[in-house]
Amino acid sequence: MTTPRDFVYTTYIKTTPEKLWAALTNPEFTKQYWGQKNISDWKTGSDWRHEHGDDGHTLITGKVVESNPPHRLVLSWAAPDNLDDLSQVSFDISVKGDMVQLDVVHGQFKEGSKMAAGVTAGWPRVLSSLKTYLESGTPLDTWADHGASCGAAA
Image 1: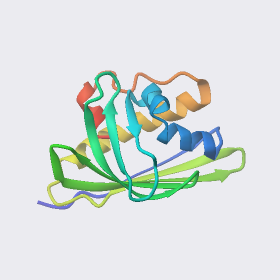
Image 2 (image 1 turned 45 degrees about the vertical axis):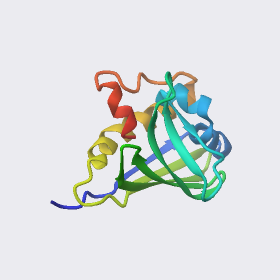
Image 3 (image 1 turned 135 degrees about the vertical axis):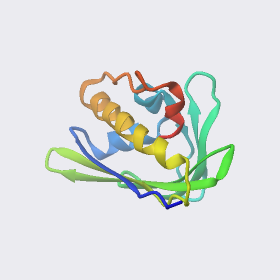
C-alpha cells in the first residue's frame, strides 16, 4: 500500500475573512451548506466534532490543532469508529482585493487510509456549496447523487 497524497483545494469567495471563519465554525451556519454541524469552542487543544445535522450523530471527531481567527484553523480529523485513521485539515484565509482566498489542505494520511478517498470526493462539494452560500445566500444540494455517507468524509 502507499500513503495517499494530500488533498489541496483553493477557492476565491466574495466575502470577508470574518464571515468565512463563521461559516467554518458556527454549527448553524455549517448545517446550511454542509448538512452537518461543526461544534467546538475553537480554542487550540479543544475537542471538536462534526455532527449529522438531523440526529446529532458524530461523523468526524478530532482536536483543534491551531486556531487563529479569522486567518487559520487546523484540525485533526478521524471517524469516531476508526480513530487510527487520523489525518489533518487546515483552512487558511487571506484577503485578495475584494475577495477572500480559502486554501484547504487535508493530509497527513496514514498508509492505506480509507478517509483519503472520501475526502477527495467530499471537499469539492462542500467547498463549492460554501462559496455559493456565502455569495448568494442559497447553498447547493451538496450530497445530490452522492449518498449521505460521503458527508462524513469531508
